[in-house]
Image (tube, rainbow over the protein chains, first blue to last red):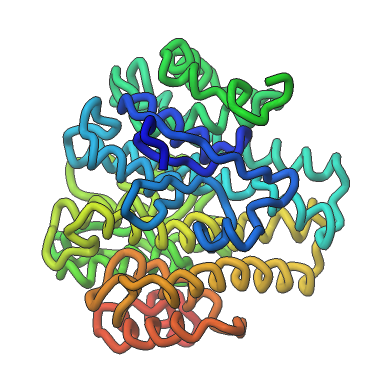
Length: 219
Length: 219
């Protein structure tokens, strides 16, 4: 454990789930010493890493003296409970339910469909070629983002961000997914585009961009 | 809204996500008047229902005077916050993080791969036949349940249930997935089998079984 960081973060530059944790750490003013797990080299299946996360997936956040924290949404809830300021969930019960629901529409319903292990399966056993894989991604991103758009466009709680005028876990999930899909144009999501723009103008989001992380191309 | 129930629940008998909400309601001693959304007839895509959940997915839980609550994990968190007894999350920070992480390994990482809309895509655009669809389900259930098994078998917090000796959100997710996969034999998961057995011996789990719900075969 580094003396100079609050946590150790097992990370890969590109994954949306790691991206979410980096954004949350930035909001909480916390630092993490990153340990690079190269998914392109299948390092997540090394026995050493499987002992940290039995699923073989990044991120894993290590707090000295405690078992590894895994699963990005669980980590975000943990960080928000342990370090309440600034809050990443609304203070009211129904607001929290709405934010967690939007977050799940993004991180639970679509993100797991787009992971390296799904790509590997579909392009081998599944018989997908590169075009079919691209169509799969476009289909689910469009389906889920347009559903999120309909909520954001019609629900009165939407503000400068997904829920009111301060960023929440929902915005973190939205930006991580939008960033992952950066080279795919999704039609008909103007509210999402406006909110993502508001997010990435903030330093906490900007510094967490995957292209700025260790292991990224040209970095 | 019924005068005789605490909530209205838009539900389908078979889906794991609805199953999770039914179990949680039982633990909290709450009742829901169910409104049947027939996924086999694609009723979740009717405009009336899309106005309730823009994603076109069950469950949606309606509390009188509030917007619909959607996404099963967000609903479970809501119910646990609003009705704290009995708790469905541990009282300590790291315990909550562990339970949420195990819940996500089940409900976030594997369940979204097994939904009717994924089946529809894979067996049409994806070119899967029935055998390929069956293999896809077996592959991801095995991959994720064996990863959960490795955690449960090695982590000291595992008890009679996933976390200690009282049921939590992790057990609810585990039972909902095990029930969904009831006709698929997964090898090498003795701890999971033991915990599921302990769960379904409880009335709160037993009453929520999909086969006992409106719309189920022979019911």
